[in-house]
Length: 168
Image 1: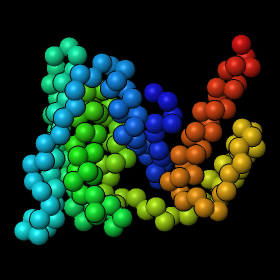
Image 2 (image 1 turned 90 degrees about the vertical axis):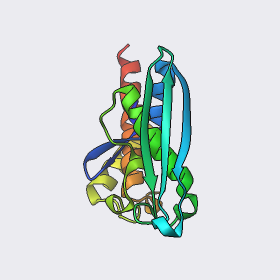
Image 3 (image 1 turned 135 degrees about the vertical axis):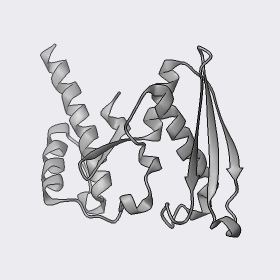
């Protein structure tokens, strides 16, 4: 799977939902459905629970659940609790179907990541070096730690592809 489908946070890789979906289509996913098991209400502390069910082209059935509440998502996502629970459930079932043991980025609790984190000096140095090598014009001041990590992965992948073409 392409590096563009991964993000690194504090040195740990996480797969992106888009990468899971891409891999599932390669494997021949037949259908992916979501059912809301619990709506977010004041009585349940605004916790939404969704169940995803995947049918594979070979007749396999995979199911899993995902949840979202104000306690495990960022404040920007709170208006989208149902969609986040759905995405988390789908990410979990897609990981099972594709045989991917790496946690999906979308499954993380907001306290596990901080989009406000500034990039480290070594990240900035590496990203600037890679930007020069790949001829990319990047505004580094606007990037947070997670974004620069993803960008570094993308540029490294671009560089590898360029090097492979030169070898041939």
